[in-house]
Length: 149
Image (cartoon, rainbow, N blue to C red):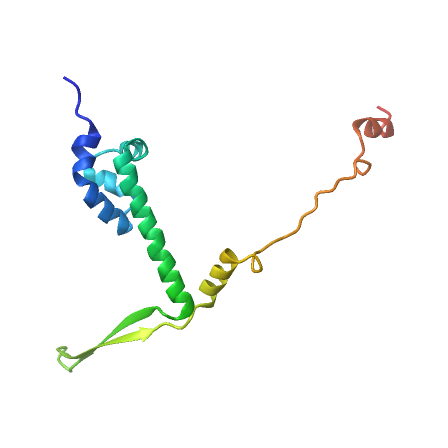
């Protein structure tokens, strides 16, 4: 009797869960352990099974899009930060709790990153010329002649 396929038994029933875990930033190595299979098995099926490959690509695309949106918001000062303040009385009981939605100032590094990657005028370019002059370096014959070898 043939061994059951690990994709059918350990991966396919959990495609949605794998996608959620991966979107949460959990790497494939840890997901493989959770599924009770080797990392190499999970990666093999990701590369060979179109259904799984599509789920993984969709997950990666989602992470990239989420990161792009966060970078854009951070660059222009649209990002928010929730700040929670708790005030306790003398006995350690919670007296007051405040949550403030603070706008984060525009981030110059994010702006610079966007400009250098989206425009030609901000690119880090270095013009390098590799012109050679064959007369600069001596030949083996010249070196041997100088040494009288």
